[in-house]
Image (cartoon, rainbow, N blue to C red; front, top):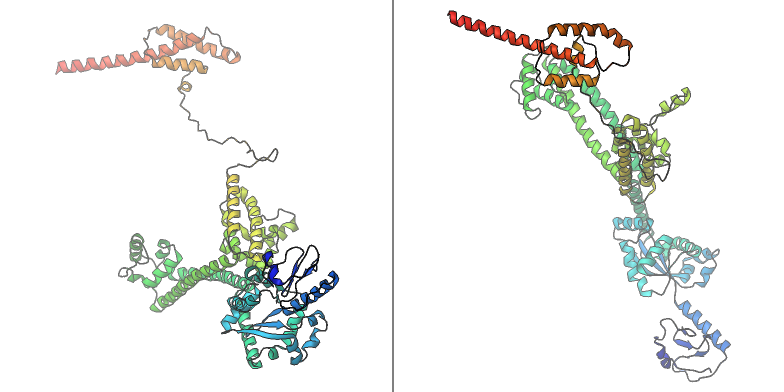
Length: 603
């Protein structure tokens, strides 16, 4: 059954008139609430104070509800966010129907009068200075919400939260919708509308003279260009290339200057070059000493240790150098000043290069070091060009001559180029340098691409890859290579090598003329020699036994097996020989005692 109800009687649904979402089967259209089941026009509330109440068909109610909905949508106008060099402008669209014809939209903006009929300036937030304008422009280019833009959105757009906001950047629209909870629109119609507004900007934005707008645009363009050049990765790559080239040139010049200084001053004081080996300290000492006759009265404790200072003073007293004039000493001192200044500048340049590499290519710096990384970038031309090279090219970068020579002569190609000077390759044994350089080049290629094309500037990936390489290097050095067959988890079994030192003892059996015997027989002889022996004096029998043994020696050489009966005879011969020598010693001792006793009695 259809019926009319005033708006007051519909409050049981828990909804405030004109706000919120209707329940199923109901709708709210600009002060009127429609209730029913399935049909939004089943029951409809006219405005309060209506004199007549009448029943109508559902189709008529539905058409009237659609008209009210269309008028309500027309009341909610679209807002347009327009960015200028002078500030942010918020326009309100007065006639959205004309925006549907995108191709002919520019005709509506041919004159200021026509443009004012379509859009109207609602608010303009002017920048205070060029710094604020640069910050806002930088935030827009990066797709972020700046402070000034956030202030405008809170002040103006947040009041009309139900209205749509037309923007020129879809990425910025996503950020605004996420943080400010505003509905943003970006399509071809909005892009054409922005272009038309830019054409009539001077007439639509009141209070800004054309000269002031052009001056602000020029100043913002210059500031933004400087900002881009300042933080451009390509330009910083150029700085790294120039710095590493200058560092190499300084090293060459320093070597030439120091060699010249040592050779020049060596004619006057040659002993100083042998005592002081460090080049910088040598130049400081020469500048402090001057003529070698001044060494005794000069204090070199700030430059040299006490021991070396005493040695220098001693060498100056006995020096074999020639005499030179004061003018020569002056020129030598000036050369020493140049060497010291260049050395200090080189240290400063190295610190600058280290900071640049850490900021631009942190992962590459962790993998191969500052100098090797800078030389790789310099050789490739830029970090982006280096990122385009595969790992195999990075491995042999710098060894092009050796590569083409090997290809021409059909010999082995080089295993490493500039990457050879990396610390991981340097601390590897010679047989594993090729493997480590290949693995390091593969990880370095990943680090280069991450630094060149990634948005993050941390060095976590480089640290992880370097730790993996160090573990792999440790396995290679310890010969812990995994087996290819099977699961690959089991380690290859390899016995650990232990050096066994053999201690050889002097064998006295080779001194005797008795034929060589077996080891068991020798051990038995040694045991019997250690035991106290009671010698049996049988000189004649001993001689016979030795003669028989000598006669039997040629027979033993022919026969492989020795008879058991002959073994005790040889042992008896050795025992009797020892006993005879023992008796001879005792006999000599007795003779000496008798002589002493006789001499004492004679006295």
